[in-house]
Image (cartoon, rainbow, N blue to C red; front, side, top):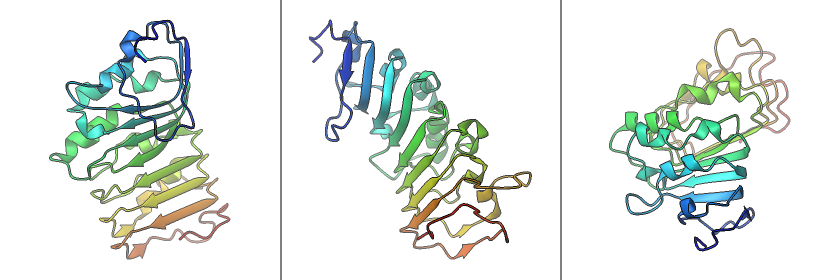
Amino acid sequence: MEKLINLCHLDISGTSRLKMSLDTSKLKSLHVLVGAKFLLSGRSGLRIGDLGELRNLYGSLSILELQNVVDRREALKANAREKEHVERLSLEWSKNTAGNSQDERDILDELQPNPNINEITRYRGTKFPNWLANRLLFKLVELWFSNCRDCDSLPALGELPSLKFLTIRGMHRIIEVIEEFYGSSSSKYPFISLEKLEFADMPKLKQWYALGNGELPTLSVPFN
């Protein structure tokens, strides 16, 4: 595909098995790329810095094999905050175990997007960065956490005013859902838009902090 130097528009959305490892720097005429899945393959292949040059990404964007990102300086080169046209962002690691949890958190910290994050899979840190509970994600409607097995706490997701669908699966170190999950004490009405909440494969979860009357006011489907 790198030989198509005059290619202007490429739409691969809906192709669930197609993962891109092409050298996009050779596609000089590419103005619009829709539905990209970038497979990071280390030093000799596609690196996350290659994403920094692609400003016209549209629709959904998946970044796979994030364990190949060395540190936060490399992650910063992706210019994630500048991907203004991306509507759904999925971040995925293929391995659960990390050598340094702080490095993993720093990497995810630098991948802070515009308000378009949708899914985080097999994240290897023990803590999530603060931006996941930032009110700047005011448009966020749906969020998935899958198999983030080393995480021992949940972000303050109650701060997200538009969040309607929340799924948390495979967090094996979560023992309790504490008050911070709802947000800061100044958040008078946490989870004001949440309609569906799913918890699954949480073998150590034993306790849930309840706020009292008015908690989860719009929840229409009982959480699992």
